[in-house]
Image (cartoon, rainbow, N blue to C red; front, side):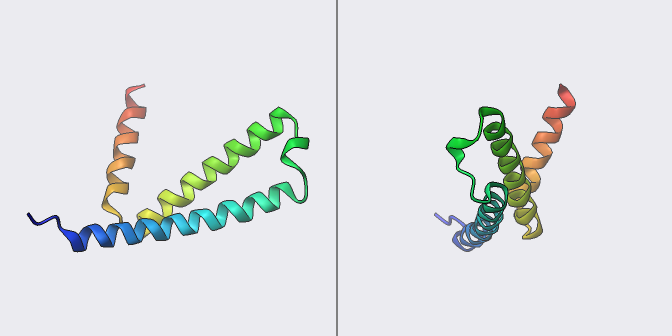
Length: 88
């Protein structure tokens, strides 16, 4: 059957671009945050804050880029999250 190959490939390529942008931002941000410090020299609180900030920024960059590239599933996911937040 027809699996909409062109649309699937297009979506995968746009998600790949979003992944590359997210990776660049995370790696750049990590080198800026760490600035020569060793992960193992940081206390647990600083490690947790660093991870939370990095993961939060990564998610924002990934979904923001995917949305700018008009990945339909991104809007569906954001709508689902909004509905879930309104219920709580």
